[in-house]
Amino acid sequence: MIIKNLKVEEGFFGNLDLSFTKGLNVLIGGRGVGKTSIIELLRFGLASGNLSVNSNDSSGHAISILQSSGRVSIELEHEGKIISVSRSAMDKQPIFSEPFMPPIVFSQTEIETIGLNAEGKLNLVDSFIPEIQSEIGVINNLNRELASNSAQLIQLRRELNELREKTASLDALRQREQFLQAQQANFEKQNQAVANSQKNLNEVQGRLATLMVDIQNLETIKSLLNAKIHRLSALIAEPALPQLYTSEASNLNSLLKDSGERDEQAINNVIQNNISTLSNVESIYQQLTSLRLSLDVSAREKRTEVESYTEGAGAVLSELGRVKQDIARLENLNHQVFSKENQLAITYQKCQDLLEKIYSIKNSIFEKRNAVVQKLNVNLFPSIKTSILRHANLASYAEALENTLRGSGLKYKELIPVIVERISPAWLLYYSHALKYEDFSSAIGVPIDRATRIVAYLNEKDIVNVLIAKVEDVIEFTLLDNGIYKDISELSIGQRCTVALSVILENPSRILIIDQPEDHLDNEFIAQTLIKAIQQRASLSQTILSSHNANIPVLGNAENVVNLESNGRRGYIKCMGSTRDKHVKDVIEAIMEGGKEAFKKRSEFYSK
Image (cartoon, rainbow, N blue to C red; front, side, top):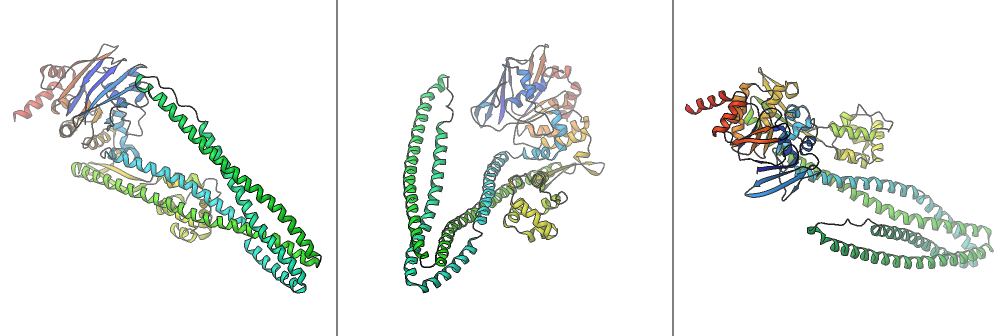
């Protein structure tokens, strides 16, 4: 893919029409003519963003050049096909004819700072892997699904605990039922008449127990149907779609209106269907409630009849009836316990499956990053050495765990580094879900009572932020300086730029745009290393640079040199062409640092 053309409407570069070629393109000119502005307009128009997290959002620069009414239009060419991209100063994102891979853009500040933080170094390696953004997008989608399942997991766990509390007395009630039934048997032996009445009462009480379960379940069904009708009604109340006014889009207005009316009619039909069902449920509910009242009366009459024989027998029968109803109600809840336990197990497994998928994709990303690292080491070693550590950046994981434990009243701060180092999020979910106190204690090396308090606390919390926390690979760059490898954070600005540019120029997979790469670099590195890297890269992929140093366009054999000029109010192209063109050669010698010397070096090189 290459950038073929940049056009600008309004602003400092109003009516600019700038063409680019394959290979090396160099923007030249005095200070203040807009070289950096062209680079930032390309970045803004193609939404390239910043790889260095220490850099500020540069879109403000482009917007100030375009002013409020300006627009940038860019033509890309990919495999013989033209892709049109356009973005105004007011657009949040570019408008394009087809999706495209944005170029890599570096300001001088970004080159200086990209090696100073973990994310910037990772972004630098990731820029070599075009498909990595789609894989990261898959991880983000899986994380959203994981968050939903984690929230459901904690909700199911709470509901299950509530049900278990409610059914905790079931065993005691069953024992009480057996005791009362034994007393009842004794009374039956005393009087056959009592036995007959008691038999009738038992039948009534049995029906009442079953009836109470149905009434309870009907109340739940009514509640669910009412909630469903309410949600469906809310869909109809959603705001209307906005009106479209352009001729190309206005035909959609009636289509959208008809679609909305059909949706509303369909929803109304569903609502009416549910209202009808609710009416039937209500009718049955009223019938069962009336039947219950009738059976209550019959039961009281039977108990009175039994009590006429013996006061004790009546009391036993009365209590036995209440106990049977309580047992029936709790057994119904007990069935819900089994259902919740099954749901909980399924949801937990979904969470673990999602974590496994995320881990698998991260491993795939690591292998691709490692391949880039090995390639960099082949091409840049021994001057620059690159290394990668798998899943070694645990800062986000530690922060999420600390936030989760905050307010627990537990002493946890000194344990967080140990936990994140020894236990992955998937294993932490396992320990907290299954309440594996001893396993957790052994894993982090703390007493069982302390481990129990931490695991029990995590069991009651939604640990989704811990589960989706980034556990990233770590990239390290070192430079050989006087026989010693020094980490990039220990280097001077010039040395950091040397490392960053050496790595950046090894990337052949995307268009590369850099503002003044020679800043902070000594002439020896520019002539002996930077120029060779630029030449090699330009033969593989388009490179666009701005520069004050003549060695870059001249020794780099730039296919396109663009001389920008400004009259103070607006910028324009003074001339453009290859370094072989006389008028371009004259401009380079006149305005660029070391212009004549650069052409002399090139002449000496080709005369050998």
